[in-house]
Image 1 (cartoon, rainbow, N blue to C red):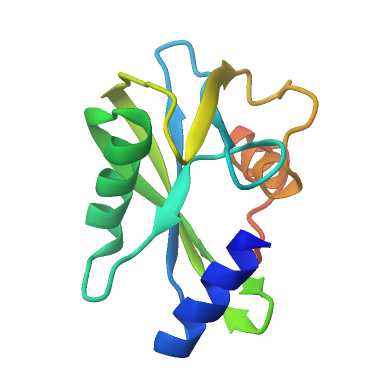
Image 2: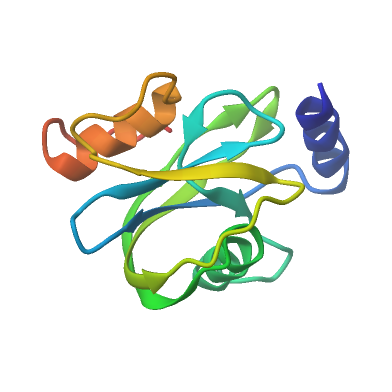
Length: 145
C-alpha cells in the first residue's frame, strides 16, 4: 500500500519514474539478493533515479545507501519497460563486479544473501528470477521487467 501511494505521489509530480537495478556479483559468480522492508521475496537491489540524475550515478547512490556498496565496475545490461499501476516505470539494469559490500539492515533493506543465479532461494521475486535467467544465458533478454 505504501509503495502504491509513493508511486501515485511521484506520478503526480512526474508522469514517468525511472528505476535502476543491479546484479552485484561476487568473486564466485553469486548474485546479491535483498529483502526489502516494503516488498515480499528476494529481489535484486534497486532504486529510483532522481530528477536530472544519470542512471549510472543513481545506481551507485542507491546501492551505497542501501547496501554499503563501494567501488566496483558497472556494466549496462539492458533497458526494460515496466508499468507500476498507471505510471510508466522503466528500469535500467546493470551488472556490478568487484564491489565491496558493508551491509547493515536499514529502513529499506532488512537482509541480503548471495545466491547461485542458477539456484536462487525460495521466494525469489518473479522479476529477479527472469533477470537471473537472462544473466546465466538460459533465456533471451526480455524487453519487459
